[in-house]
Image (cartoon, rainbow, N blue to C red; front, side, top):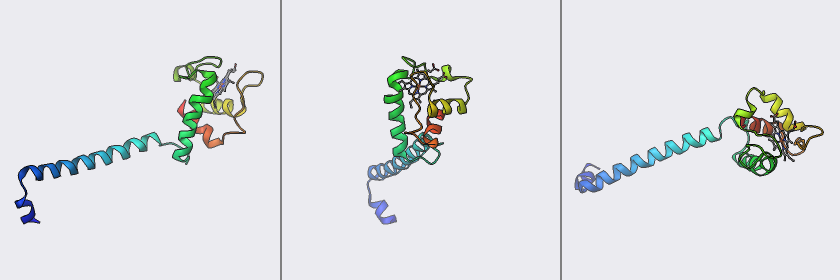
Length: 121
Ligand code: HEC
């Protein structure tokens, strides 16, 4: 090994060290960021979380605005939901609001799905 390292030109050795450092840094960053993105998921799979994020944008967004900042349905941005409890938001999503356009999602979504949505809002 020593012989091998000695026989390498300095530049090659530096290049190999840089490559190792970059790979380690990349692996650590990706692990940490995906960990955060998929944390607090109540055991939902990554695939389900991606489906729910799409549902929020496409289905909920069709009434609440594509940026969830309000349209036919009210804004779902953090400022608008401030002071409303997670339980209240979950109940609204699961059972809808009778006599309004807000439909019940219970037939399509599990408790864990709604928990994720309510945490996300
Ligand atoms: C067909 C239109 C429509 C769709 C689709 C829809 N909503 Fe609504 N939503 C409404 C309306 C209208 C209200 C206001 C009801 C009222 O007047 O109390 C509402 C209210 C809410 C509220 C209560 C807001 C508050 O300030 O109290 C939440 C939370 C909510 N919707 C979440 C969702 C989520 C999450 C989805 C997707 C899973 C969704 N909505 C899909 C129409 C819709």
